[in-house]
Image (cartoon, rainbow, N blue to C red):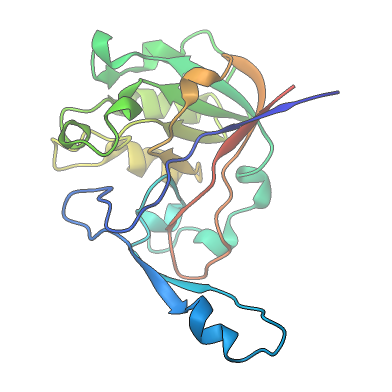
Length: 220
């Protein structure tokens, strides 16, 4: 059977800002093509790139270690928690309100699924509007997702918590239940409400709780 792959990740670019107060990535050549050409006699040349960035850059996944010192880090996340998950999209347009409460998920079978919250906020990516007054989940929504067996929770917004507050209940609840979180997703409007497989796999890094991913969905 034929299938379609839908890219759900933002492009990471030099010096771009994902979260105000955190530095943008520095992307450069470690080994230039010109320098490498001197090492070969057959005209071959190679580029080896170098990137210096904080983990919370672009579209990324949080593991429990991001919030809890004794939580699973990236190297300890089961592959099954990140790859080839049965996916569903919950529509919560930001024009209708920024707080996504438990009612948005009522009556939906969430068990064992990647629950992706489509707010449409990704249209503001790389603009000043993206960083403030953004859509978020409530603590009650997070508790509902845990109670009903969600396997992964993602959102196409600046943060899954309300960054106007000095607390992070959604991170605390979801990561406390070993549910990975995906933030800064994009393109969720291209997906059906259900009937697709979702993947957002991180590198297997010891001692880190967050890392950028190439998130995507497979339809068909």
